[in-house]
Length: 293
Ligand SMILES: NC(=O)c1ccc[n+]([C@@H]2O[C@H](COP(=O)([O-])OP(=O)(O)OC[C@H]3O[C@@H](n4cnc5c(N)ncnc54)[C@H](OP(=O)(O)O)[C@@H]3O)[C@@H](O)[C@H]2O)c1
Image (cartoon, rainbow, N blue to C red; front, side, top):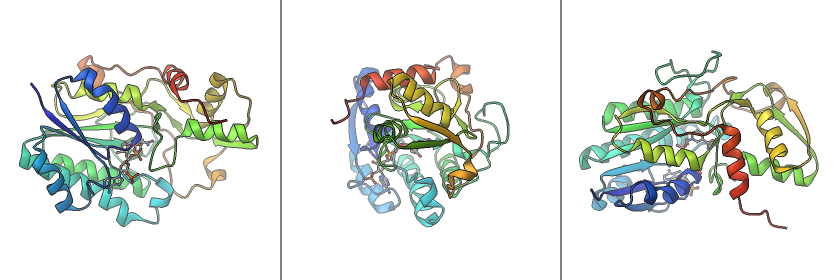
């Protein structure tokens, strides 16, 4: 069946990879990308007037404000974009009887446990960003049952995160090329997740799977320091890389010390297509455009 699918926040890194894989997975769909200039999710009238005339059957919300440290001083903006925005989208989807895909984060967890978090584990955000995403999830659940909430972690994609001005892999390679010392935290354990396989996984989830909450991350885990070391190893780059603690990093927002997610619901349904994080990094490095000379 041919559907109209709207990507909200279409210029972001995950959005760009979703646009790339969607025609393979759903060849009959008509995809429309709405960028920030086309729709401001925190504004109910903007959401309504941008979405309703398109009459979509599926809306994918990729818009977010996720500068985690900056947000500690801008809670109003974070709650407007990450909480009220998803609520407006869910209300529009309810009016249109459209399914809604919404993205959330490992930062909904406090990170005090030492086994991967499953979807049903208790949420306890440490940062304002995490709280704004938790509240966004809740408003989506309360507003419109036909939703998929997809939590992921440590995203990096060819397009680079618009909100963060690039991605961790490119930042590390740029710092290594500059030749200075590189200090990366070794007391936050995560799962770096490339946006291309995540996009394929999301396209799969939207293929008639039950609505609800899904964790979708690459397999395995590492500290950010170990991720940086693996980037340099795979890229064949030498760098003056040393570990530092979160306290030494001076980051403003508190972050979970351990926020590994288990793709438990995907595994239960037999549709977990996420690769190992090292394999995903190799694929990313092979595909990334050559850095300018
Ligand atoms: N990046 C990560 O490490 C990470 C980890 C876990 C979960 N997530 C979640 O995954 C999703 C996608 O993240 P991403 O890294 O692909 O993000 P991204 O590259 O920063 O893209 C976000 C997009 O949203 C747009 N946007 C921002 N504010 C908006 C607003 N008020 N109304 C409409 N559009 C707005 C941005 O446009 P402008 O740039 O023009 O403002 C940008 O194109 C988000 O929900 C994020 O919270 C991300």
